[in-house]
Image (cartoon, rainbow, N blue to C red; front, side):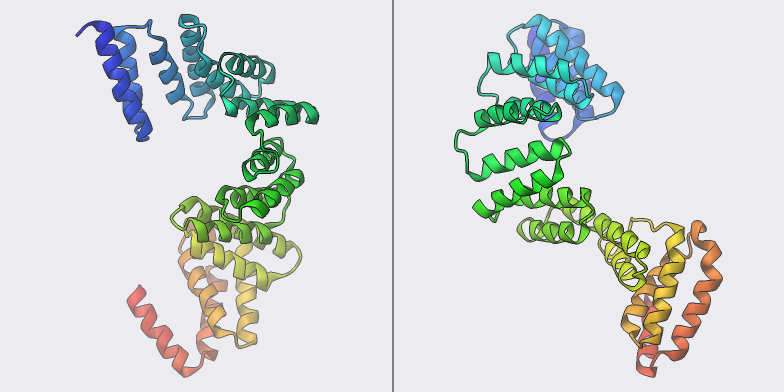
Length: 329
């Protein structure tokens, strides 16, 4: 097999690994292909595309180098212009991004995502009418769910969250099973500090796609943000309940040490009102956390709380608690 033939063979293998999210192997194969033949534009294109998977500054610069080389070797390469434009957009270099994206659609008018990105740039510059012109090229069916969703994404990416929510609502009026619309509506609401509504929209997304872990992780984070707001308002019982809900979804989340006394105080109030079930949930969670070094200063306060809890706990619940502790420790 010739050097070029072997390079193309490695390229095809690299694409397969890329599509299976094995990015390190893809990079290895593409680098081998470049050593065999550095003049194949497709190899540079895919080497740049793999680099964009890691959004750190160094990787983005590597991506630009390879996309630029792909374009030098093949000037009429719309996909390379498009991908380089996306990188410039991620770097905040809007003028360069716009040039590349315009060239991409000039070479291939069917690159619909390029129109969406051009619309995003125009929206950032405050050119709403021009943004809508580009968006209309994405969908000629104004009024369908994809149209409103695309417009919502543009507003979202531009940081115009209220406008984004309006469009996602229109999307969901057209199609109540549009999962991504619920997700982006949730994130838009969270950016506006409307965490309860954000959680509710993520719940709807979870019902439709229960296997998507990221929805649960985001939901847990929003429970935490809601709890922090409630602490500021003095609503310590609600705040504590939401901290617990967040931890029950994602136990890897960390509560800032300053909120531990709040949770202890909330547990004390629960005990006073004889809400032993909720108090027990808080105490169990605190017991797990209090072992960590950053919470050690609150150990004595916690032990006092636990002792008081066990003292007032009804006999039946005390026995259940005792047995549970044996089997969970």
